Image (cartoon, rainbow over all chains, first blue to last red; front, side):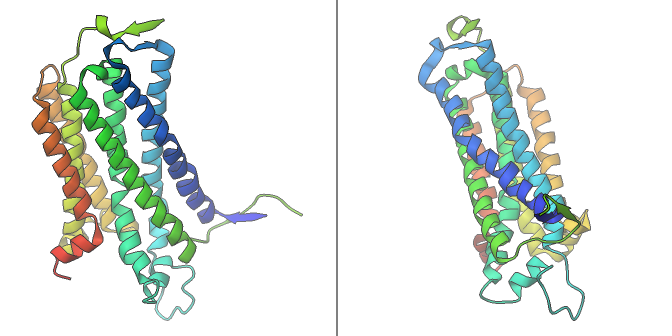
Length: 187
Length: 114
């Protein structure tokens, strides 16, 4: 069983960082929303508060890892320009997609939207984590602040969902392959 | 050990307001730069600060610089103040919406007359 380095990094980008972020999202909304429901009398242990902080900081870190690996590792492989006369475009995902009107939309809408919209997420989640760390349980007293945090967190979720959706389909129609082969098991 | 909010001294909202408004500014910057890089070839060329990733490298790097610089400046001014959050929230979400719209290819293409 083998995998190429580019495949492995693409899997880490999408299935590792991106999917973990999406899975963690409902927990983040729960943590923030709990401060709204419980109100000023909310009793929370230091341990729980530390775990909430760790959870949100981890989500922000996952968001940064996702966009940085996507922009600076995978995107250059995706947009590589094939040498003149190349007929097999399988190693050049962007060129492969735009070579046919049946698949060009996956680049023109999918990748062009995905490459930018994904960047809203780390900005929003860094802000969300910072505000939660700074205010902690006091967030219950700042209703407008809390609502803004929830709004930006929802925008982060939407952005990640769009990027993840198109990422999955782009990888189906024009996967990024190549690089050294890593042998996972023999026989 | 647990903490009871009712006995806590309330922290002014300035630091939070600065973070939210800066996130809005960062979002709008992302949208404006993405559109500019796509609409004007010379701008796209300048934004290609790391050629393998093309203009996206400059769009995202400049966005991060603008976002962090605005956050730092706002935090300095507002850290110990109570800010009327209504307009901060409205402005932040307006800038977020602008950023989201400008990065939506059909909308950006229409703006460019394509």
